[in-house]
Length: 200
Image 1 (cartoon, helix red, strand yellow):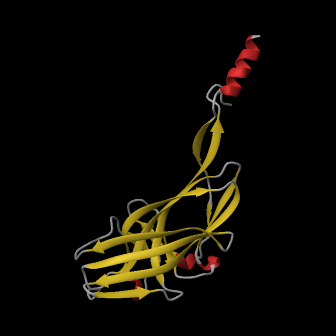
Image 2 (image 1 turned 60 degrees about the horizontal axis):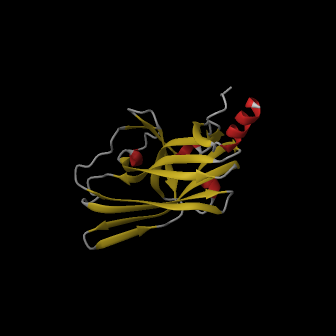
């Protein structure tokens, strides 16, 4: 009788959802690795304007029964040379693709970059080329995403960069141009637990 009553209570108690950190693979091409943060050691990857998912920042997520939450930090990618022209309003637009052609969303980061502005940490760059000397991420915006159940690969690709200085606006949407940086990837798998059921 008591066991029947307990079973009934367990069945009636709603399941709670927990997010559990889960491993994933970053499969971006090595030439997209801008470098690592000198404080966090977080990897920063360049995002290229492209319609080809294989040319983007590829991430292979594990199989999940319930799906989960994926997030990353989005940054402008700018060459802060002396003649860049500040202040400037910067709008960077990227897209996240799944399964090659399915869009999971278009995301934008917009900031006014003032003279003397710096990124919140230094980047130890992989390239020592002179052309990359002044390249840096700027600003930081967390992008959270819901991930469906099952296996999934996603690709982060660039769409456009818009730079406004005074009354002059320049739009860059040429394929192959690196316009953004991404970092701080995190994937949490969704798991349902019953609060009345002892955990293993």
